Length: 484
Image (cartoon, rainbow, N blue to C red):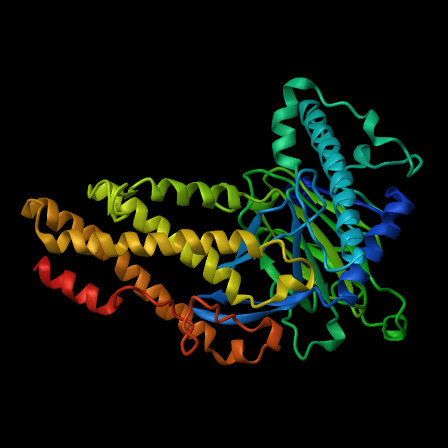
């Protein structure tokens, strides 16, 4: 009896732990949408628009086994593993976007249609979840392709059903909208048979992993993630392979899910076939980890996210630049530049923005080479504008240095300004050395020519470093002597 009670308790725990994953089979999606989206994947692949990212983990650079491209709202970025990806903008009213070909335009247009569809599905699923919770009922967990986490949320009728008839109560709209208004989709592609090595899933014997256990980064809190999967099924090796791994077919792609930092609760491995999609609702991405288990055939996926863009849009960084430049003034007669204030807080804010522009935007963008030109030149103008801002902030750094050398402040004020300035400059020098090393690394040198880190004209060609109106190392040494 005790053994049976223990098994029931374990089964109940298993069911309740995974209730916020909603899985939908391909036949719930309109066929026309399937065709458009799957054609867009193949088009982007044909135009060589998928790239392996050179990411940084614990101070070392690694290539991702999966190739990716970010598509989304103009001016949006998405950061993961210390790498900022810049959106290939999908067609958006009010923006002039020049694509490299009409086919790429159509591919981006198809993905925004998928985005709209998944947004509506996510709202419906969250509404259903709220309804179920209010009735104190439990969803049924998915154990294989024929089962569903939330059968009451599953579309049973025609796939052409008009979704616009679904109504969201006004008082819930703001919350639901903010958690499901996807501003980017990260597209993934991988052919596992072309990989020399794939890691094995370490806890549940689930087999080869295309993507290891992780939480998705840089998302709005409690926002839903939607993933549409398209595997190129039917290869001969897939059809003849009989081995099973912990109840899963190794030829079929799966998404794995486990409770974060818990290997006692059984994990899930859910098969993904052509056109299936799933939703990770509410806080599931925070409380759980997921992985992608490789099948045998090539696979695309479109992972729609509400990226936290509080510090990741052009609007944001341009606003920061304009804030910094408020401390720069021009003499109306001589045209000479000077600083309005040498207050420590003002200097610190300006110099930190200076670092942000250089290391979170300019160097991140050019480190990725000319990859974005495969799709569009949209980012070139805003990056040129950021370079302009950066040059002005370099001048402002020179002016701070000039002012503290004049010794016109009180000794206490001067020492405070120098100490603050020194901290930011030391960080700047450290990061410049790190980025120089990354540009010259063996991994970066192995990239195709159009993907190698760019030595942009305003960087010196020999070491991918930015020319300054002063020698940064000398300045740091000089300032250190001044405060001793």
